[in-house]
Length: 239
Image (cartoon, rainbow, N blue to C red):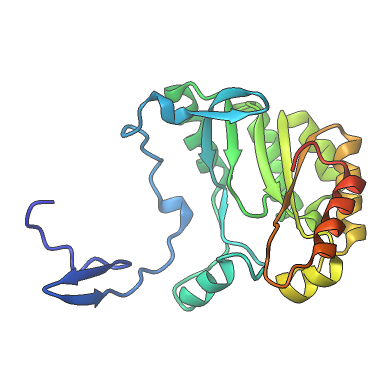
């Protein structure tokens, strides 16, 4: 803006006088030090997202950042290497502070649906999970959407989520061929674990989404049909 010099700002590269200045990275931030999101720059259209056949005033929030896994198709592995030595990569936000933000923006923007963008929402301790369930129901109680991995699906967790106004649980399966997942995706979840996870969620009649990837390197026609067959077994609400 104007003639200000932005060439010394960490985390960005700047072209100046024909040369590229490669600034160093900032240390990873403690999530509890971040300010609430400022949505003042958005117009009303920004808040409406299509979901289950209608448009909802939707807010996107996070209670954690980072992932403990290193899937080949995801940016996480490279980000972990890039930020090595610059702080804790997998970080958790204080639940009360996270809910403070949700409540403030919910009231300000009249939200109807909450979408948690955490990579692996249920991969937390029972103490943290139970506190979230209690406080979310008490303080927010809007329908919400989470994404997680099949390994984190526990029946005691799912039974408790049912009482918190959970709307959808998205679970990544990516490919229906177990050998392919292990060799090319660095995912070591068995078909048995995936099927059991969906059986548990379906038992409690919570909407599910199965995340799949089509067209990965080395994927063959047979792998595609393995994915179709696995989807037929797990019976997700959408995919």
